[in-house]
Image (cartoon, rainbow, N blue to C red; front, side):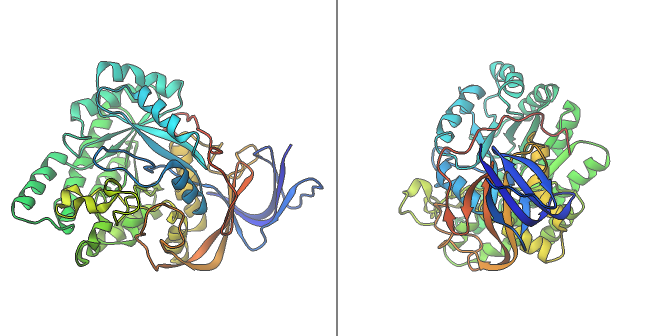
Length: 470
């Protein structure tokens, strides 16, 4: 029987803020009290530190293979990086390939992740081939396999995009059995016209990635997805929302009582479209989808986080190296040096989500401490069927705990992060607030700069209904 005792920390959850001791036994929180004594427990002094539930990142792409390009983080390196950033659970993606069943996609990803994962994990399944067999499998995936969320793309025609009819068919099936549909909302067909026109005019540089994916096309698709979900009577969740106009559609739907939810990402909160004016190919580092937006969108997103128009901050960690070496051209932004359409879409970020949001949210006075925990841990757990096992500090919950120094300043840099990717969007950015220790089910896996975890210690998490409890 293993025991861990965390002493004198300031415990902060989505609703609480108090000083107490936490006794952990066999991976779960055994008791919380003002004073706990134990002769057998491993003791950690948390005086002066915030004690928070482990972060949950519900949008990552580890070891993600799109054929022409593959992300450069493995499940081992990506989840280790997540842990150093205070994230103890991720929800990654299992991509259904054409001709493949969703169950086979899940089995394939489980086999890849289980020996490597350093933190707990689950999957959304990306549906790309909506056949009668696909629809037949969905209830069993929800009820027996613990996969209660399914992603579909309204963008990337000919690669990932599915028709409105297939989205609607899937929504009805998923909603009937307690699942939720997540949507990448952009009008892919219109965007493709803009891309082809730009290339025909000889516009190949990275900035045209942003110019061919206008805000209004994200807004249109967001409105359309919500209306489809309303008809299908299913909760819908908009991933990586970036545009003010798209947020307006979510707010309007929520005001009407529609279960429409949305996340945003740190890069939309801290960076703007001006990054695409960087000289040469440097702007390719900032090619993600949707692209970075104008300052007015940033202000709208922060307001949305404060007033619960946006429910979650995830990272969309989708890392491609900037340079070709050491992982090859398929894992590099250089793949699109002569054509912005071929630049792998995605950026790193899983390690910096919590310190960035603490700096820009809590320290800047935009978010309370409780709201900060809600956005990074509790809301993701509730939204995706992990609560109360995850996402809180309570008796009986998994002892996924972060000790965080709110006064310690440090510099974000690719030279010190733990991802395979060779750059960060926030190079040289100074933040105050640092992860000091991380416990995964009671096991200390991060202690300052020391890694104490191991590949394979992360466990697959079966999830209950998604989009029903918030």
